[in-house]
Length: 247
Length: 384
Image (cartoon, rainbow over all chains, first blue to last red; front, side, top):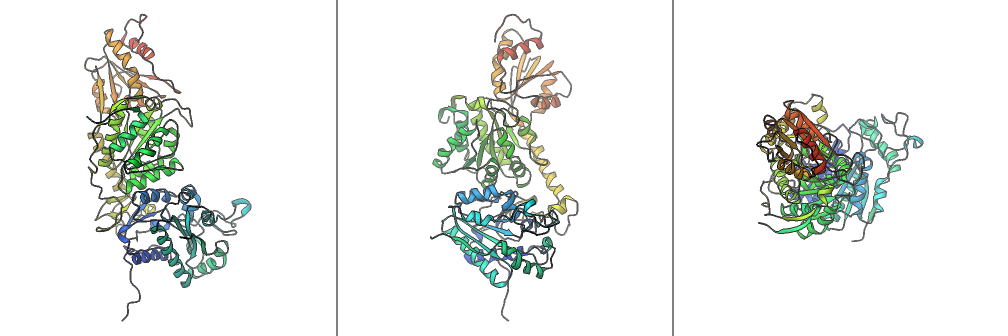
């Protein structure tokens, strides 16, 4: 019988699978692990994890990781990459972590052209605290802290931080991908691999924003949440490569 | 004997750090600490290290956390408000990640942005911590450039040994004091094996740093990370190899060990003293002439100078308080050091406070008057 699925080496299920049903984070972790396996760099990788569901569930990455304070992963990764320039260094951060409390760190890391990769999991809310409004929450989205939906008059507009970062000279590869259907998941993997390769070639800062479903936070069933991602979230956050610098 | 150099304390501390194997320096310009950045900006790269100016003190301390967690000796320098901004990171490095670093706080006037003149009013911030939760940091109070150089090297060694941040409490006056010093010998490159450094898991099991855990290293087991469940007491034994309580008890045990083994202090004329003057850093240096003068008049006064501000030399001060009649604390703050001295003396003898504020330093003549009054010496027209 042919083997059609196996665990990656760079990520392993160590205890229980703790993500909510339909959560996209497990897919994102899996894609990163597949890419690192394919590059053969598990032993030279240092991951810097921000604060969110992806870091508070049992550790699934099977390589060295540092845990950062909320929003500060790019500062930690800056030091690690400068001191260990031949390692593959990436941060995994949420949209709350990166686009709210961590805006200073991410902007300056990109400005300096730090040679690590940022993976921002955007589920348009603070999933870990219970689905509260994040800078990325879209207009009209109901959350426990925007019970009548996000109103730009009161709460301001969604932050398209990835578009902002793409403007910076130090950023060499910036893309947004979505984990809503198999074709897009394969594209997401390609973008992550490209971002890592840009890093390894020493060109500069690379970043992939990954739209991930959060059925619990969005108060939707898993299948409905994938539909909401395609029909609502992706209207505010269109997917595609935002910047590909000539090498 | 090492290299003889002549420079101010800010620059000397950076030279000592390089001598101690520091390979990463970050900071944000903040008077009166900025000369540390200037010195590091060319000296670190020359020594094969990395210098990087941070976009804020918050970023700076987190860069330090990254460097430390990757196993590199690292340093930052700042002053008052900048040090306050670093406190969350310091708390995490001390109490959760347990990684070593050295932080220089060149104290200036506070509260708030204060002014640029020397004070010792960050004593409490350094010895009690301003970050969340229960934790301690090593804190040193040098009085001269030579002491600052020696304590910087000691700070790196002890920070490594105990995997904890160490703080050098300098001040504006010491920082700008230019004098000769002996740089001494380099510390061994890696006296403590950093098997916990996250440098890539080639040839070993992966390491996760920055989470409380039972043990670190190859067989590490960590709290699953579901700290929320842990903190509200719902941790599950089958998922969590350890509780947060166990982590904190281990931390408390480490702090007891540091308190037992790493206290450092100096004394002067204390053997026959009736009055013990307690002061550290610039205060201790400035009042020495007053003590010498009082001795020359027959006054039985001695100096007790804490060198480690944490661990505080409580037992040594308690012992001294059994032999003296009175204690005088001299500090450039509103009554911070005196709290620790009073706890140590525990009511055995009166403890007086001589405090200067707002950038005013204790002068030998004013402190001298206080000393002579306490000792009951006839105050003629003597001048210190």
